[in-house]
Image 1 (cartoon, one colour):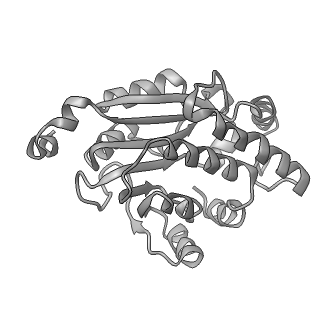
Image 2 (cartoon, helix red, strand yellow):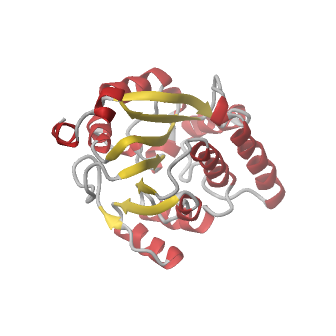
Image 3 (spheres, helix red, strand yellow):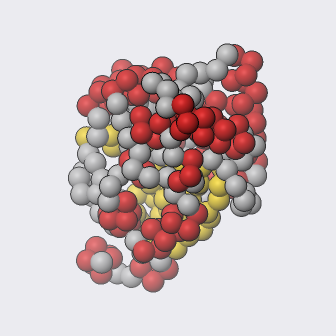
Length: 256
């Protein structure tokens, strides 16, 4: 992303309706996974650290971020050192060492998305899970995506294909941000036609509007862990290793 995007993220991710709503849904989904009490968790593409406190409820958290600026901001915000690294071939962690790996709107930034998912699979413990979010619908592509250096937006079938080709079993695949989908779609289509210098959606809306949008998006935390939404601005997937790989000896898993 542009350096200004990281500064904007750091300034808004604790109150902007989109960050708060996504975090609330992710928290509810992770809570439903029944992780071990001493779970080891990895966030890849951790940005400026906005999800760390939420993830620490569930275990010991490690974080990887490729941007030097984002890691510097994250250290100032959280007091933690994030690991430098990038997908698919430079994530400095041991194989088979995590119960949960999270990528929140990261995969769309990566050219080699299937290879990245394959690399992540080897970092999971047997029975481990990945929780991932990505932007949905290529037809919503706009200057918003260009400014954030997205490579693509995903259809449900494209994301399912990438995950399964990388050797996973999908536990859940659903759209999110359904209630605000019409507003977001109109904003993206308007950006595409007008091509503004600064796309819509970056700034935090005025307080009352932000509060309403946050409540509407966050309300999906009561639905998404147990249901599949038929449309939305984003996609959320939960997936893990194939059962045969989970039960294989450690030596054969690492050689896979």
